[in-house]
Image 1 (cartoon, one colour):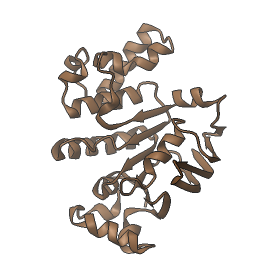
Image 2: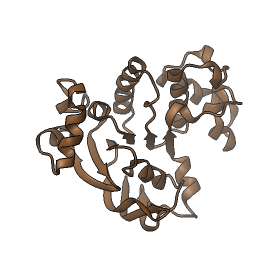
Image 3: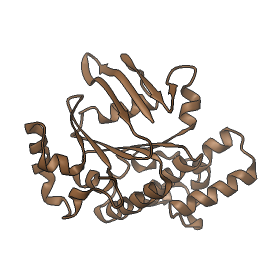
Image 4: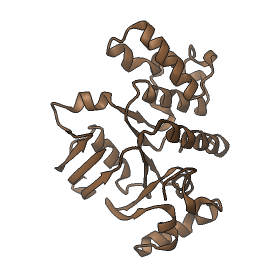
Length: 255
């Protein structure tokens, strides 16, 4: 689904992402894991074209990302950020349907798709006419997820979307999203610093540090076959929070 070749980026002379050549497979959930400042969010922003690389290239679904293709590729990519990234002056309904209205979809098509994604994201109909300030954190995040899903994109990029939620809401949404991703079969890149979250969602994990990928594999690889002392340090700092079944990955995940 995604190929990067020699992709790198610096900010103010500081390396945010070292040259990265890799692939992300279609229909799988890949978690970009690591501490703050390790380059995981930078990689996501490069993939959606919010920042330009210093060098290298990105190919998404056979199309090279560039000035001539960026708008079309963005329309085929769902992007979810913390707290939903909602516009405060728009209702939940208008936030979700923003892109569809921009693309001048027929009203009937918008209504039909809105109903479908509201059901997928478990959004109660009464919430659709409310403004973000009147919604809880979990409700805002559901609205953000529904907005990303509305155009039925083959690719979802999720930048720490659950990090601001309380533990109970976060755990519940993790379970729902794991099941949703499995049912929809979309390609998902998910950014987090939380090993527990990665273990519950990922088919594949990229553990990053200082702009570089330290190790790639499943949660079992990180636990049993660390490639670097940093992997052991990172795992030990959070391992007590892992559920007993975490080494197997998400329900239904390929081993």
